[in-house]
Length: 383
Ligand SMILES: [Zn+2]
Image (cartoon, rainbow, N blue to C red; front, side):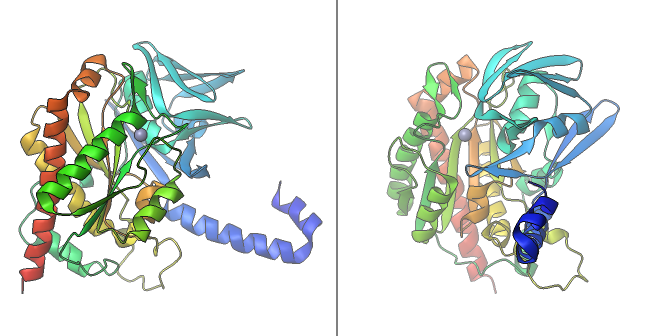
């Protein structure tokens, strides 16, 4: 319904409310706009998209994304044809099934046919392009993320933390950790080689709970203890009620197709840092979101885990990237989303189901958290 039609129907008061609401949505949407970058041999293209929230998941328009990145998209009934980088992939609308020249794979969420538009979950964009077209589509913040993941320059990171006006005071301890097994219930997540993401994420989180309790003496809560539906709001409610000190969401994606196994650690974007120093305007609704307030500490947690993974799992690539998703935005504690890939590659799926690999991976996550805790106490002792 257009704003004008609403005006005619509801009168001036409704129009006023709508303008106010639109203003708020615009304000937060502007700062939470999702951007992607496509690197080609003749330069880079970028796309800027407004996120659309549906059932607690952030989507963007695939039609707009593909066009902005220089490809073509058309829909014929439920079939969506995407032409990109001289290749074609087909998506069956309202499913997560993709058929590309390299074979078939599934995304974490359904691609939705929505009134002439096609919506793709933000978390599925990079897997789609990387797997279907073997091209490098990234979040533009990646170079900065990579720099954060590199060994810190002494003093530099601490300085960033202290000067960040929105960073809450560091507690210097981790008493409670919240683990969030991705998906659950009707939401299977990625599937491949007879494995379901929702099951693997839950079993990994259960094992990690024991490992964290035994080796670090940390109290651990799971956002879901069994195979059941859990929205982003449910998950953040459990985490925030528990007054957790860290939040780790665990996913096993269909990420890279035939490319080497990789682990990506996502943090909520720290966009408030881009405001000019002269901007002294009061904190708006988006800037006060927990994701922004805890961005510095979330980065530190993500970097500590990434460092541990690079040391202990040297045959696995590990990146730290930004992701504007709801569980990272709404949890009132340092939060990261760890995505291990992929289930779509049979060899790597088999490795993921091996007890040995799981132990090494989980042990490394625990080592990363230990490193993060150590960095907090170092900061507390510093003059
Ligand atoms: Zn997932």
